[in-house]
Image (cartoon, rainbow, N blue to C red; front, side, top):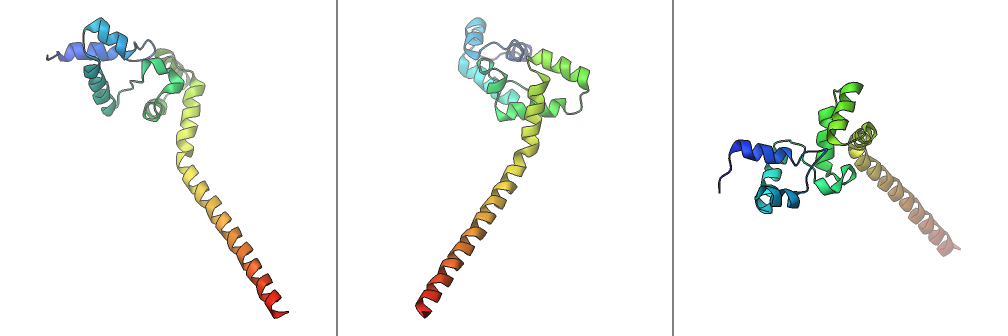
Length: 140
Protein backbone atom coordinates (compact mmCIF):
# COMPACT_ATOMS: atom_id res chain seq x y z
CA UNK A 1 0.00 0.00 0.00
CA UNK A 2 1.38 3.42 -0.96
CA UNK A 3 1.13 6.28 1.51
CA UNK A 4 1.05 9.92 0.52
CA UNK A 5 4.02 12.12 1.28
CA UNK A 6 1.84 14.23 3.58
CA UNK A 7 0.66 11.20 5.57
CA UNK A 8 4.19 9.91 5.88
CA UNK A 9 5.45 13.31 7.10
CA UNK A 10 2.61 13.56 9.63
CA UNK A 11 3.36 10.10 11.01
CA UNK A 12 7.09 10.84 11.22
CA UNK A 13 6.34 14.05 13.18
CA UNK A 14 4.70 11.88 15.83
CA UNK A 15 8.04 10.09 16.27
CA UNK A 16 9.87 13.35 17.07
CA UNK A 17 10.69 14.44 20.61
CA UNK A 18 9.57 15.60 23.11
CA UNK A 19 6.26 13.76 22.78
CA UNK A 20 7.57 10.93 20.65
CA UNK A 21 5.11 8.09 20.47
CA UNK A 22 6.61 4.60 20.75
CA UNK A 23 6.78 2.96 17.35
CA UNK A 24 4.65 -0.04 18.33
CA UNK A 25 1.89 2.22 19.67
CA UNK A 26 2.03 4.45 16.59
CA UNK A 27 1.69 1.40 14.34
CA UNK A 28 -1.52 0.41 16.13
CA UNK A 29 -2.94 3.95 16.13
CA UNK A 30 -2.19 4.62 12.46
CA UNK A 31 -2.83 1.12 11.11
CA UNK A 32 0.64 1.02 9.54
CA UNK A 33 2.93 -1.96 10.02
CA UNK A 34 5.87 -1.63 12.40
CA UNK A 35 8.22 -2.69 9.62
CA UNK A 36 7.04 0.19 7.45
CA UNK A 37 7.50 2.66 10.31
CA UNK A 38 11.00 1.30 11.02
CA UNK A 39 11.87 1.79 7.35
CA UNK A 40 10.50 5.33 7.31
CA UNK A 41 12.39 6.23 10.48
CA UNK A 42 15.63 4.72 9.14
CA UNK A 43 15.30 6.67 5.88
CA UNK A 44 14.54 9.89 7.76
CA UNK A 45 17.59 9.35 9.99
CA UNK A 46 19.76 8.89 6.91
CA UNK A 47 18.50 12.26 5.71
CA UNK A 48 19.65 13.79 8.99
CA UNK A 49 16.37 14.01 10.91
CA UNK A 50 16.51 13.57 14.65
CA UNK A 51 14.23 10.60 15.39
CA UNK A 52 15.41 8.81 18.53
CA UNK A 53 13.59 5.79 19.91
CA UNK A 54 10.66 7.10 21.98
CA UNK A 55 10.94 4.62 24.81
CA UNK A 56 14.68 5.15 25.29
CA UNK A 57 14.57 8.69 26.70
CA UNK A 58 17.35 11.21 26.02
CA UNK A 59 20.02 9.09 27.71
CA UNK A 60 19.12 6.17 25.47
CA UNK A 61 19.60 8.10 22.23
CA UNK A 62 21.97 6.59 19.71
CA UNK A 63 25.37 8.17 19.18
CA UNK A 64 24.16 9.32 15.79
CA UNK A 65 21.15 11.13 17.31
CA UNK A 66 23.31 12.75 19.97
CA UNK A 67 25.79 13.88 17.34
CA UNK A 68 22.95 15.29 15.22
CA UNK A 69 21.66 17.24 18.24
CA UNK A 70 25.16 18.62 18.88
CA UNK A 71 25.44 19.71 15.25
CA UNK A 72 21.98 21.27 15.23
CA UNK A 73 22.73 23.29 18.37
CA UNK A 74 26.35 24.25 17.67
CA UNK A 75 25.56 27.78 16.49
CA UNK A 76 22.58 28.48 18.79
CA UNK A 77 22.67 31.14 21.47
CA UNK A 78 21.52 30.37 25.00
CA UNK A 79 17.88 31.33 24.43
CA UNK A 80 17.60 29.36 21.19
CA UNK A 81 19.32 26.38 22.81
CA UNK A 82 16.81 26.48 25.67
CA UNK A 83 13.93 26.53 23.17
CA UNK A 84 15.47 23.65 21.21
CA UNK A 85 15.84 21.62 24.41
CA UNK A 86 12.27 22.30 25.55
CA UNK A 87 10.95 21.22 22.17
CA UNK A 88 12.83 17.91 22.37
CA UNK A 89 12.54 17.18 26.07
CA UNK A 90 16.24 17.74 26.77
CA UNK A 91 18.35 19.78 29.16
CA UNK A 92 21.11 22.11 27.90
CA UNK A 93 23.52 20.21 30.17
CA UNK A 94 22.85 17.03 28.20
CA UNK A 95 23.70 18.78 24.94
CA UNK A 96 26.89 20.14 26.52
CA UNK A 97 27.88 16.70 27.80
CA UNK A 98 27.26 15.19 24.38
CA UNK A 99 29.28 17.99 22.77
CA UNK A 100 32.19 17.34 25.13
CA UNK A 101 32.04 13.62 24.35
CA UNK A 102 32.06 14.37 20.62
CA UNK A 103 35.02 16.72 20.99
CA UNK A 104 36.99 14.13 22.95
CA UNK A 105 36.09 11.17 20.74
CA UNK A 106 39.28 11.32 18.69
CA UNK A 107 41.46 12.07 21.72
CA UNK A 108 40.71 8.62 23.13
CA UNK A 109 42.56 6.95 20.28
CA UNK A 110 45.62 9.19 20.69
CA UNK A 111 45.66 8.76 24.49
CA UNK A 112 45.31 5.00 24.09
CA UNK A 113 48.25 4.94 21.67
CA UNK A 114 50.35 7.01 24.08
CA UNK A 115 49.57 4.66 26.98
CA UNK A 116 50.42 1.65 24.85
CA UNK A 117 53.68 3.25 23.71
CA UNK A 118 54.64 4.06 27.32
CA UNK A 119 53.84 0.51 28.46
CA UNK A 120 55.91 -0.93 25.60
CA UNK A 121 58.82 1.35 26.49
CA UNK A 122 58.68 0.28 30.14
CA UNK A 123 58.50 -3.38 29.18
CA UNK A 124 61.57 -3.03 26.94
CA UNK A 125 63.48 -1.41 29.83
CA UNK A 126 62.47 -4.24 32.16
CA UNK A 127 63.58 -6.91 29.68
CA UNK A 128 66.86 -5.10 29.04
CA UNK A 129 67.49 -4.95 32.81
CA UNK A 130 66.84 -8.69 33.19
CA UNK A 131 69.21 -9.49 30.31
CA UNK A 132 71.87 -7.31 31.90
CA UNK A 133 71.45 -9.16 35.21
CA UNK A 134 71.65 -12.52 33.44
CA UNK A 135 74.76 -11.44 31.57
CA UNK A 136 76.37 -10.23 34.79
CA UNK A 137 75.41 -13.51 36.52
CA UNK A 138 76.98 -15.55 33.74
CA UNK A 139 80.20 -13.54 33.96
CA UNK A 140 80.61 -14.20 37.68
